[in-house]
Image (cartoon, rainbow, N blue to C red; front, side, top):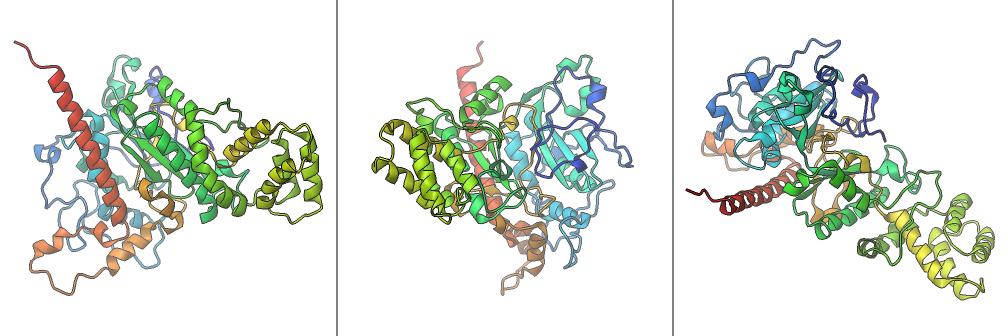
Length: 511
């Protein structure tokens, strides 16, 4: 899974689930870093909202009539300039999620811009946490726009409605407005200051151990690997590092992303990010390498806790559902991980005599033959440790650690639509992680049809005002995901207000 692209590459040649390029280092020549801002082969000219005359009401826009999610009955509130009209486009029943009209309707009617703003801004009032934040757009013609920035959620929404990107990514907060980077006298003055600590888990990294699917394909059986990974990583981030504001987001096809918004996580430098990624990285080596788990004994408390979490999944989700050692060559891989040659020979002989023996039975055979004295010189402690390492190799999270190591890494925004599946990148409730069904996540076309199919209650609204109260997302299966995200943002904002009050108390004004 690639982690970066050169400036000359086009996103069209990259897998939809691939991670995005890091922002350039501070000393990169600005002209070179900006070569994506000019769209070759495209007539689109990107305007700079930060240099327009922003009205006061745009900065503090809480007017209920200017709803982020317009009701289907609303037909006014036009977007200025070249933006499409605010009235929701009509979607044909046969429309596909890749149709530009479908994406435009999704952004206009369903995308939670206001909550995204509050999440990234850490305040209700606009600040540099949002205004100096980079956004990167992949347009419908596969042109790629870097260093977009917006002072308010309203301006972000207006530009997205105007450009109608197929997806967009979130980058770091910079020392200055990313659009103004070329006006700086020294390129080193433009550098990344902060960004959420992020983690990426992708099922393609499990292809050597999952037997039900491969590549971009997934099913409920192999999704259990993502469930295991989320449980292990989430408890480590909370218990071992004390992070509180963590939200997991479905990638839209075959993985999940963790976003940690605690202030000390956002402001970590690359060295600290690498250290945390290294702490969580246990599986090392490619598909052709030998033993992938090499950990010291006694086990670190994190690994001991992880084993307790994972052993319940190992029996059913791995041994039964995946049956990883059903084939002789796969069973040979298991024998390579065991420490006693004599025991291995006895196991091999037993398995060769029973070709259809399941992985569950083969795993039980290890202890059975060991107790029967198949090897007189068996080191039982070494065998126990080897079996623990096998459990870790087949269940422990396989993190794409390169995503986590740099503050300037770009990552797909929550609630965008995956271009390959049409599914929305919705948040995952950590309290109900085992109930999450990636194949049940709504697609963008399903959501738009749900709006069209929704009917008001039998009782007719008493006034036009009543019809405006229900926003379009509330009429769809996206509602629970938006409300979960809103709840997460609310807790984060409350914590950020507490931090600001503490600073004010610690540094009183003296006369």
